[in-house]
Amino acid sequence: MDVAIIAIGDELLLGSVTDTNTPFIAATIDRLGGRVVYSCHVADDPSEIYSAIGLAMSKADLVLTTGGLGPTKDDITKEVMCRYFGGRMRHDDAVARHIEDIFRRKGLPMNDLTASQAMVPDCCTVVENAVGTAPVMWFERDGKVLVSMPGVPREMRYVFDHEVVPRLRGYYDISSVELHHRFISTEGISESDVNTRIEAFEVSSPLRSVHIAYLPQTGYLKLRMDAEDAVLLSEAESLFCKEFEEYVIFKGDITPAEALLNRLREAGLTVSSAESCTGGNIAHQLTLIAGCSDVYQGSVVSYSNEVKMHLLGVNASTLDSYGAVSVEVAREMAEGVALAVGTDCSMATSGIAGPGGATPGKPVGTVCIAVKFPSGTVSDVYHFTGGRSEVISRATVKAITLLIRGLGCRATGLS
Image 1 (cartoon, rainbow, N blue to C red):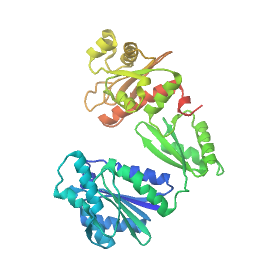
Image 2: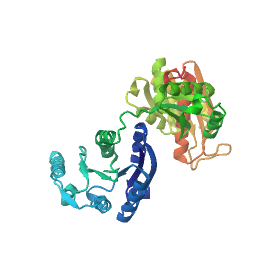
Image 3: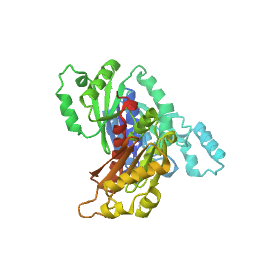
Image 4: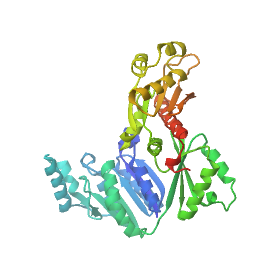
């Protein structure tokens, strides 16, 4: 099943909204055993949408569109669908009742533009949208299918998972397709180096017999291994982890923060953080994960020297001798927050995220990181590239992965 995805909306082309729908759809199609062969962003312009549909239909068996629906768009996409598939607009009583029910439950008046969403092309099958007012539309032509879905991510994900995918399984008879995946995250080795070393294996090696996708993340490299043969995939995963043992930091389709929490739980340890240049981003990444409170106890964002001294116990003499951006200060921050919060482990960052603040010998991107373990504290200075947000993200990931490495990786699936 070859699939094309069209994301409709001026806001996507202007960069004011990030398209999260296309990656979500692509990942789901991949799990179903399909293949995304084409995707694009297109403006809220009838001629542009029409051309995009024609191109997508020529390339794929299934076309999935998001956006261009709803009262603010004046149903531009519906009119284009009528032109492309042939037909005219009709009033759908079931859609109208559904919209009225939603507004009645919210206690809101319904205007004419919202009511107009009950108008749908007579050449489509209407698919229920239980979480929104914009109807989902299923079109068929020459053995191919186009499904038009709303662009609001929450609505799109719900209707795609609960309504569209079940219909696709029946239409394309893909219920028996099962593609297995394994995820491995590495640090300290480039995508090209991994690929070169894998290519050096003999043709019969499991690593040469599975598909490997390289998924670069900020601060580390995630790889996805795909195969229909689960046994072969398991052998390839084991071989990879053995060959790249020094670079593997965790396994599974999880984030570094999730991997760290897993490791801490297994070890029965707690953690805290003291952050200067990362401004609480370590805490943010950990607290994004439900249930983190059993191991993550708290954070001190110590941006000023006064806070470093008064809340974390950093010595004034250390600050005077080495400066706030130093491994010595970072070590005292890590040890201070662990003592103040009462945790076994901790992470601390102090650096220059930019764009200003550089000093002789300490350019923008300089970050000192310290990690405290029950057995002692380690620290080092790092130099990260990129703008302010990227330096913060890279420093955050580095602090987390340093703690993961120091604690070992058994909880992340590695022996």
